[in-house]
Length: 265
Image (cartoon, rainbow, N blue to C red; front, side, top):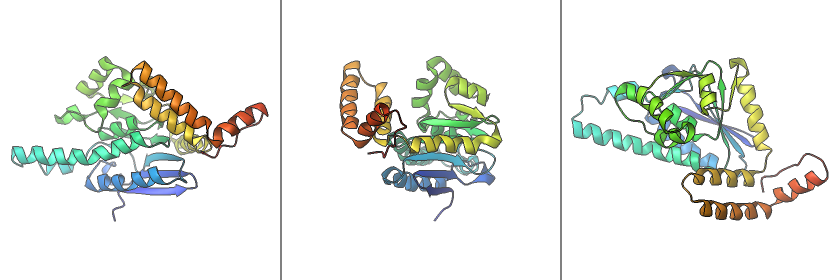
């Protein structure tokens, strides 16, 4: 079994770690297989309340594995087109699983966040970044268009004109810019990155899981819904949450002027 991506579980927190530090965690076939194997486990394990996505080595993810790409450049054109189309299809379940997952996903990013690394960052719900991290969509620099849901997430985060700039020029930007544009939520010194991410994950793990799932689902669908559809979905989700234990505990704790103790039910 590959160890290109590692899974560790500590109580209610699962940590998924890219583990190709020598290659700056550039995406290859082994990583794709590992992510497709690991993410469903995290999604369907009822004891896991939150997921952290991080990496070993000097970079979060430096995009696709260029060495892997280089092996294909001499293929006949039609074979090359088919090969890459099938490869890209294999990453679709990774992105959809992250978008669909009812549990909050927190990215912990440092170093290079490029190419598919940007796609994964945008698929996470929250992100804590090291102040030395840097970002580039990068696809245009190797003569291709983006994949991994980049073109879905990018205009929704930064707006169409800025999305065009980031995608068409491929320029690098720093952590402060990433925070200003909305790619990351917090920027911290490198030495504090792991601690800051874990603190956020622990806060989420102690929160109302059913309400998190409903909130994620509502926000994900909102940009493709009419107002009437969204209002109906909100009503159904609120009622579902109100029927659960966490709602009773939240209301009781508020009345009793004490912190709530949620169970995620």
